Length: 324
Ligand code: UDP
Image 1 (spheres, rainbow, N blue to C red):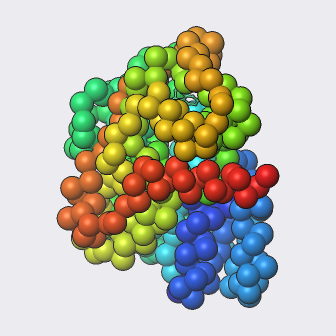
Image 2 (cartoon, rainbow, N blue to C red):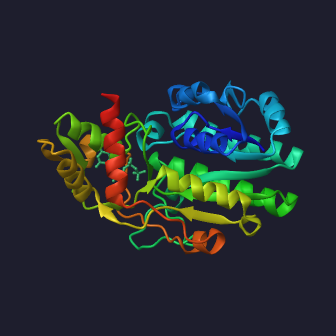
């Protein structure tokens, strides 16, 4: 099969590319390297996949290039997006243009060539909720537009609306996946993601920077488990036209996460509480709780075995140790 992965040089995209190559697919990647990097896929070229991996450095907004790539591939995984809270806050305009315009371009091409597509969305679309678990039919609750964090949620929600409209009016075969905090090897700490940040801080015995009071919670999913979910959802006819959460179920507070990482590394780092107004610009608002319901995912693809938080942390630690 020929697979097109937009954002294939990114953290999740590069793992998807690797899994597809391992199972014998031809993989086409388009990536503008805004947050992705060729370092994520260089090993694939070296690993005997040179004749099966084709990389285009370009934006998904380039309609000529997208026409060519969508035209020759059988299915499309649309993962290209501006991601990471810090990146979104630093680049609000580019983020909106990439997320909204990019997805529209992908959908247009997939409709033109009648290609099956998976659109990556995010748990951010739920916005501010204190209840758990978050179910796909829950309301989206956002803050005002002066708080730029919500532009990410709103742009991805527009992507979802657009995709659903293509499904409804043009019968485009698609599925939308809301990814919760995905972690694993190759995720950079550069764009603010908490787990790689804490691991790198703890390995250097630097202060571990917990924002706010650290009582906010998240669940984390290993990227390997996310890839299994994406591949199975693409193959599931029942997933056509559906919005589905993919995420872990082990809820942990950010403070407890810092403690776990510190203990596992045997680090002498101090765990330092940083007030939100010091950590982020003033238009920032954090989410206090984010736990997915995975019932719909399980009903569509069966139970996905998931690595535990301890296993996930161990894997990220050994990845960062291997770099030093
Ligand atoms: N966070 C933190 N210290 C850091 C980076 C992030 O305490 O150095 C917190 C952040 O405020 C949020 C949680 O960790 O409450 C997860 O942040 P991340 O940016 O990884 O993902 P989010 O779930 O916010 O998209």
